Length: 70
Image (cartoon, rainbow, N blue to C red; front, side):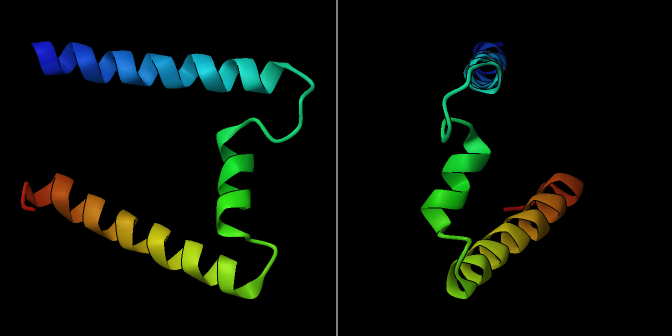
């Protein structure tokens, strides 16, 4: 039960942070904007690195959820 509450709290904290960021006029404060900046997605190398990491995570997560492995 404790971990369930912690995960729900983490999701709620994210929703609050992102909600505030979406409703203000400050540029560069949402998770999407930070991700673009962190990976320098305006460059080909940055886009490639981001795509590889994202695709790898998506594949791992699907296998992990479906099979319960890893």
